[in-house]
Each structure stands twice: as structure tokens, then as C-alpha cells.
Length: 88
Image (cartoon, rainbow, N blue to C red; front, top):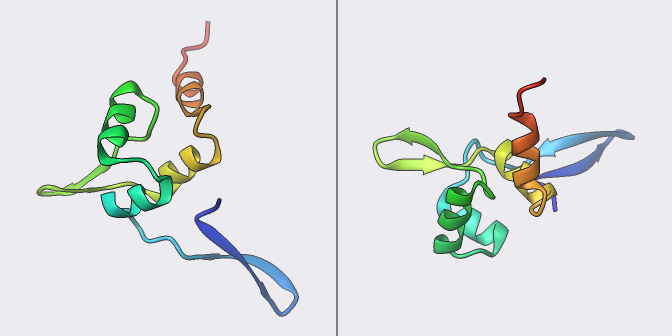
């Protein structure tokens, strides 16, 4: 599943973005098919990207962060841990 849909325009393929700037909780629940409680538990465990705070009580997920999880849900924790590892 991808958040961007390929399109063909005059024989040239390009990515037509259909994603908003931020996904809200209802969108994330629909995309992932996970409950709100499961999402928050996985965020606490480091197995799901945390939301960005948008101001006040509003928060949302960037398409990039959500796409990283959609591409490899089982490997998300591993990807985060390896990107934050300090070289010897």
C-alpha cells in the first residue's frame, strides 16, 4: 500500500500526491486497521511513529513517517534503532 498513486501523463510516469500534509487519528486508524489503544501502545513501545504536535491539542502524522511504517510494520523498530545507532 502506498500513500501516493502513480499516474501516466503524456507517456511519462510521475507520482501524483494524494496525501494530506498530516494524517489525523481517524485517518491513521483507517489506514492501519489498528485501534486507538493499539496505536498508542505501539508508539510507547517504539513500534509506530509518534505524532507531530500541530499546536493546541491537535496532532497528526506526516505522510513520510506513516509510509515508513506502512512499508515495513514488523521492521519499523529495527529501522529506527539502526538509524539512531552511534558508530564505534
